[in-house]
Length: 597
Ligand code: GLU
Image (cartoon, rainbow, N blue to C red; front, side, top):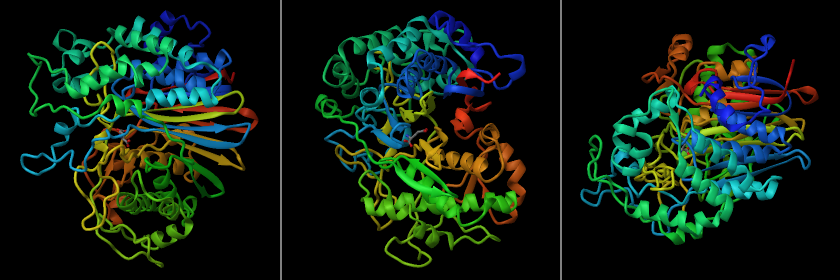
């Protein structure tokens, strides 16, 4: 959402301290646009209202964690198809005073009754179609987002969770302006949303998506946030809101007279109140790897983001990308991610033993994998995963397919004390499982479809099959990079499995290919996830396609856009370059506490 659309909203919010107007001198680096430069703290999200709320918290003396939670709660209102308390995510925190990086795993967890064959149709023994699994109760895991906010606020914040939910409740009450992205996300989901009374009431008023420019309100969500603010998260995990979540999963609120047709039966799921009562966030140690003298911290399992970004960087480190042609650098990039995805699909899931993760992110493993790359010719895809029991250039094993997604949202926050939050949160697909919890105003996740529906690894074990209380593998890659033990860069993105390649591409654009951070974010993207063809944005395909094709790469059909990243770079003397997307997903919104004049 663009900042101009939020002007009315922020006015109704009475966030009087938020600087909205660009200064003439800084026309494209102003607060609320895709890039903001300055000092004293920064916020970058996909949405201007969420950024304004986060900035306001910083300006009133809150720290990065406070601002991140308040901004995330606002995204639950203004980006409800990507994130909210019906979902989960991964929160990475850099503590400036201690110089440490910590993480919260707030991933949704499978119900206790979940079986490995949950997504196999008993009628024919075949996996359900993706949409059949998604728009059902089967796809819903115990939401972890609210528990994440509470844990973060308690451990590292300076404000109560209650106070951080209230600005978002006001946005939900007062409404915000529908932009083209919001409108389109509903239009794309109209058939699924139209099946449920609660969802169509909120998002298909009069049977159609709200018009661009209309004001969208969500009084039920405002009430839910206020109830949680008053009574605590127990009302969700042990109380009436949780009971409504469970009822929705077990008895989907299917309309008697659905709007539009849906090709599949809508199946109930097995989530129970005791699943909610038993939910706990985890605090895994971050992944850590070196890259050209920098230290890269990321998210460990159940996300594959940290190990995958680390493995690919380790492979890329074998070549000085700044000294080769751009085509060669992109060739190395595509080969490194193909190899990495083969390994990730084979080895990484919720229960991967630590020694295996350590091996995958080690320099010696990168040597065993990088030796496969021929600078003069692309490997035939899919490449097989490496054999982690082997030494030397890795012998082949059997390959497997890859998944992708397109929802989710990311935010980056820094405060005046130097603390940083990098947070990716999601309800999985855009629109989650399409069910708004009646009377509560939020959509449920379909995160369980991040499990593989059936084994993908031939005769080898698949690390990402469904299981009781298990968390599905993610690709979310909230990443914090230090240089000489001081913050250098924090970034993340949505985009399903393309998250990993988007984060990598921004990193190498910035670190190796001589781009500034705003250039690195804006540059056209491509993603090679060990499939026959590279998936690329049209501008990337046009610009680099001929060179890469000459090296033997092929391209699959272009996609309009990959990712919707946010990032902050930390420059000398406390300077901050906060960046969001200039164009993707309608453009994001970055802001700093004290803009550079
Ligand atoms: N559910 C996906 C994951 O955890 C993210 C979905 C998306 O970004 O579209 O990797």
